[in-house]
Length: 143
Image 1 (tube, rainbow, N blue to C red):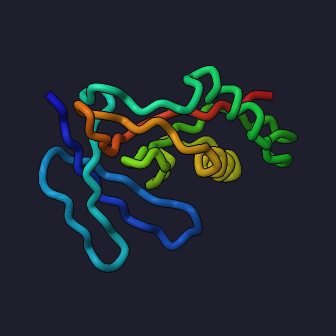
Image 2: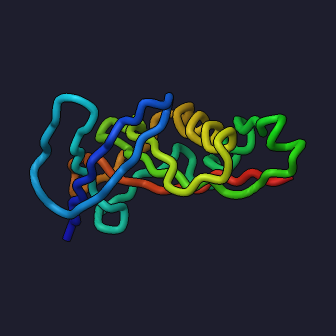
């Protein structure tokens, strides 16, 4: 059985930042102003989870190729894993990128940039119907 998740996106004033809150169930609703409710499916409950083109190894190769370690963070020895969420939409495009657990602001911004540059994914499916799916990945930064 598929589990639908509803989450509210609150846009913040700072560039590129959003906060996502989740709750179960309900119909799609849109609010005017700075928040939006988006319905997505949990990846564990769809028949076919979304996939980066070429699979997980191809995704790691993409991340390693695209990642640009912010110079100051590198020099100061800042490292860690930036945990991000995003939605893979019915057409495979990525939206609603959010930092769930950041490390440092420049690393957080770089993780969001990498995800925003990803190619179109193979969309998640329930039966033969493509559906939006909520995903979480970590982008590692190590010296």
